[in-house]
Image 1 (cartoon, helix red, strand yellow):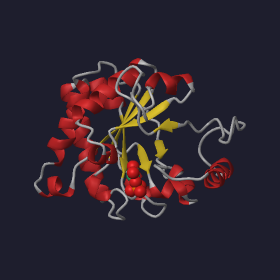
Image 2: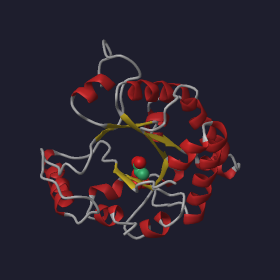
Image 3: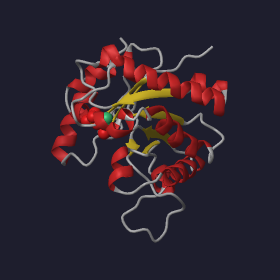
Image 4: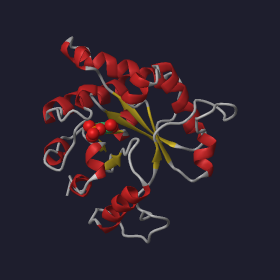
Length: 237
Ligand code: PEP
C-alpha cells in the first residue's frame, strides 16, 4: 500500500533581495496550505522546509564559492536540489557529477530533490524516456537507498518558457520513469518515489497536471515568487 504525500517545492533561483524575500515569506506564512500551522521559527513557518539549490560533490575544503553538504546539514537545511538543468547546462554538471553529489548529500543526511529532463531537440527525436532513464541510472549506480529522494521531471523546454507540458506528456514521462525504477531499482522504490513535475507550472494549470496518478507534486520556479504559489500548494485539494 502506498500513500505518496503530495510534494511542492519553490525554486527561487538567484532571486530576492531581503525585502522581496520578506514579502514572499509573509505570503507563505499567511497562505492557507494543507499542513499544520506551526509557529514561525525564523522568517518562515516551520511546516515549510528549506532547500539549497546546489552543493559540493564531496567533503568541504578549498572549493571557493561552493557550499558543502556538511555545511548545509550543520545549518539545518534539510533539502538540496541537485541536477537542475541550469546547473547541468550553465555550470557543466554531467550525469556523473550529479550522481556523485546526490550520493554525498544523502550520506551526509540531506534529502535530495533530483532533477531530470530532456531538451526540446531530444524530445523531438523521441529520446525523452532514454534521457530521463540515463540521468536516473547514473544516480542509481551510486546510491542504494532512495528513501530521501524526490525526483523532479523538468523538461528543459518548459522551464521558464511558459510552455508547459500537457498533463498527458507529464503523466507519460512519470509513468515510464516509475516503470524504469520498478525494473532497475525495485518495485518498492518505484511505488513510493515521489515524481514531481516542473516547468511553467502556474495556478491556472496545476490542478489538471496534478490530477494525474503519477504526478506527485511540483517544482516551481517563477510562480513560487508570487501569490500563485499558494494555489499550487493546494493543487490537490
Ligand atoms: C525550475 O526552474 O525548476 C522551474 C520549474 O521554473 P519555472 O516554474 O519558472 O518554469
